[in-house]
Length: 250
Ligand code: SF4
Image (cartoon, rainbow, N blue to C red):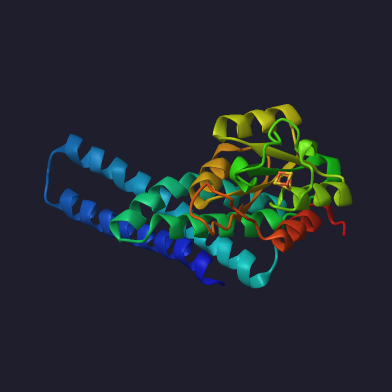
């Protein structure tokens, strides 16, 4: 298991520990009070906490099973994807309490999401696949409007828009460049892809993956040699590997 996955699973284990300690504490409180209503309420909370804790423990075992046994099935995969989406906000709070940088938990979340998404059995036709990237990948002085239509690019090679076009032509996939979250959502609604390869910073990728529920999203964190949102880049090998994984082509 790589370090990125460990952060997410480590925080999940801490959450389980905290839940277990809370259950013991609640038991202690019941023992020291005699009011029936009070005991009923605390008993109800204990039951709820216990149920949640069991689900969390099963989630950890589910992950370990998939990671170490290399086995996977569609239902387990979907359940784990749903669980990481639901758990992310709590683990983000927990990571803040323990001083873990937000970017690291976001990277960990993306890494686990990618692992689950890429180990799914389902494959897609190239035209069902969408590469979605933010506008900052375009060279800042380029005057061609590629957000409306990527083919407006003149392929001068000053930025990687031309490389994305090459991938589009090589595999027959779709590529969209969006200037923000709203337009990215619109692109997804208009194109209706069956799978998405999203390129963005940690924060936007996390919110994008959490946003898009029905379609698998493989997230690729962009490279920011000049700081955020300016002449960004992407590892094209990683993009191509994700295309091949989704389409089983190559
Ligand atoms: S590769 Fe395309 S988008 Fe990038 S600077 Fe050249 S013309 Fe503009």
